[in-house]
Amino acid sequence: MVLSSRFLSPRLRASAVHRVFRPRCCLPPTQYLYRRKYSASTLLGPAPTTLAVNRQRLWDTLHYTAQWGDSKDGGVRRLALTEEDKAVREWFVQEAQKYGATVKVDEMGNLFAIRPGQNNDLPPIGIGSHLDTQPAGGRYDGILGVQAGLEILKVLHENDWTTHAPIAIINWTNEEGARFNTGMLSSAVWAGKATLEYAYNHVDPEGKTFKDELIKIGFQGPVKASYLANPLSAHFEYHIEQGPVLEDEKKAIGVVTGVQGMLWLIVTVTGRSQHCGTTPIDRRRDALLASCRMISRVNDVAWENKGLTTVGVINSEPQSPGTIPGKVTFSVDIEHLSNESMDNMAASVRSLCQEVADKHGCTVDIEQIWRSEAVEFHEDCINAVRSAAIELVGDDQYRELPAGAGHDSVNTSYHCPTSMVFIPSQGGISHHPSEYSTPEQCALGTQVLLNAVLRFDEQLKKKS
Ligand SMILES: [Zn+2]
Image 1 (spheres, helix red, strand yellow):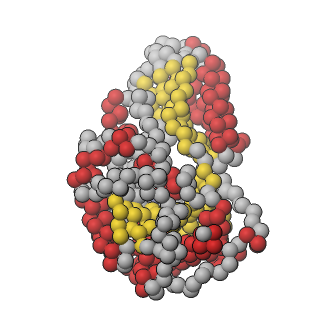
Image 2: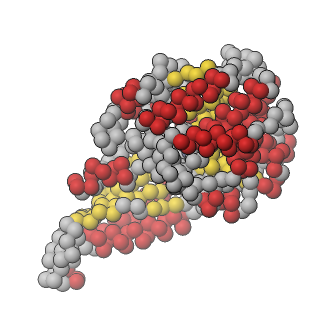
Image 3: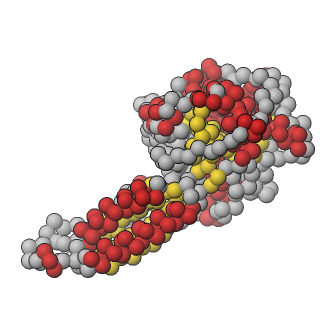
């Protein structure tokens, strides 16, 4: 995704792109949810084995690795390609090797810890998430998904269980986009949605390039970052919900059916800067007043379309209490489960802004700077997760929901069957040191993940 900072004042421009216009990832989900219909006959049978995850080991390991980037307030600050990221990666590699996996590193530093199966001609079934965090992040977002993968590796190893397809535990690089300002960057390169050159040229706020920093920590691997050169049979991602829905509804497990679409507009309203005291109220072209009326109506668009709209940034010029604002720029974030509705909402925003601008003697220019399509996950993977959830918690204790935030699974879903498992987040809080899920919740989600992967593996076996 390409970001524009032209609408920001020059003073703010350098820092604000990193601070304010961070691309979407791991943000709270929308309140607009849907439930998919399924028939009992589509459920898969019981998991092919009764392998059990080790709750205490998972919990201890999760908190052990929080030492790399420990923010001393219960959270983790582990930005991509820093010394802390290097340390946790080195630990990941050693740990995976201890339990019988071989670690492949690709050009983006994505790590694939591969445990062989019975049929190693098949691409591995991926269990992926991320070990990088937000600047003031928690101990669970992303990290839990990778740790759960390692726990599964340990369970398979100690039980001497060989899956049909190989299994790959994946750590995707720079999912958060907190340091290098594009979220899900490395899975995007793997998916062919971004070029290697584009990714390598990202710079952090200090001007250091992604490529140099990747080389510096020793994780620029030889494997091509590509779904063609390094394919997956499927991708399962386990994550905290990061929102309040599961907790509010007292559900233990979320079966994630897709990810909503997201779109950004930058609206520039131009009026005329004039003296506040000498310009009569009926002769003004007040760009900020017009913008306020637009912003109020942008919110109506969300209600009318059962979607979400947010104005998160406003800049007014010339920033003088004695001058009528002559130019305003503001951002509009639009989200919907349907791409068509999302685009209709954008069209509504465009027309209402034009109408309001005309009334206020202003002109308006609207630029779309980013669009991420809504994605529906694959029925085979959803079904594997759903079947595992029902088996473990029953029909009443799970719900289906879309992810409101971007995840690497969006990118994998373009090239292999994909789904996700959610567990509740206490208070719906995420991207904060107080992010929390209980040891029982963390273990339950891992068990659902394991059983879903084993079910999917069984299906692959039947097909081959
Ligand atoms: Zn995440």
